[in-house]
Length: 372
Ligand SMILES: [Zn+2]
Image 1 (cartoon, rainbow, N blue to C red):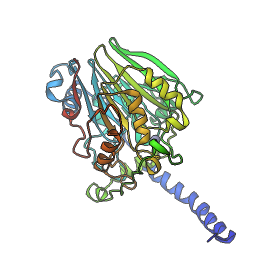
Image 2: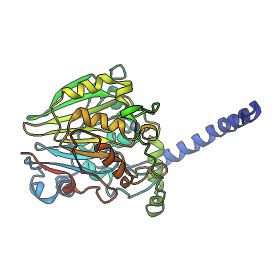
Image 3: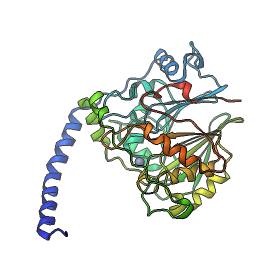
């Protein structure tokens, strides 16, 4: 039954009337429970953190240097990874999930900063990807990479005058498919490709038709890992950080190719140029791609598969599928069967390296590969 204008008007004015005080109350709470800045890590902090994230054997006990004969990724929630590749240590996204829970991911922004990453690569600016980027860069000296908007957001996350550098890879004016090539370190080259955020589309037809994926939110993790006031305040402060464009990154040494993206957009519908550009890249040894997104409710995992088909990986690793915000998310286990089914539709099926939360957080052995 259609709602009367009175009902609609009443509901609207109650919402509008509440919005002001509720928003003001929340932002006062968020401001009051300020997070102290992350201290600058010592060498001892760095050695300890790197040994925990990458394994004792992978890190020199005197200098903290990461060995270069292995590529190691350590997952710390949602789409965030610490990576050791070609002797360089860097971060893909920078957020330790918290706010609806505390301690579900067993680390802190201070420990991530202690890794002393040379760089932070931002996939997009939403809080679940970049909410800790500014404070971690400020403490660790990492150079942030992202669009002009991501750089602006990261700077705003730091009180006072931010001292970290941010390399701007395009801006809101860039187009899907735009490409940026640069060197991270001697022997480690990077390609960033502008793509698009996940978005709901109308149902795909024919060979592209896929079953929706609708996991039930796993609220029990809020009871097991109740949130602290400080973590809830952190989440509220960052909740509206803007997307600012979406970037996919490929990292290459002479012998290894790693590709990562933290959202999977409806490329075939909205940005077919991106598919063409991804096909021109070298095949990926490891492809880490987002599988959770708005289109899963309509078109299942068809959008993630578009990326996998274009990137042709040997190993595919899902991300962004864990219980990073248990009011709306479930545990990664819910994606295992749909992921297997989706991959089985491919002509050349990559190995699926499924990550499960919370057991696979900061377990370097899950994603260690010989650098050949
Ligand atoms: Zn997002």
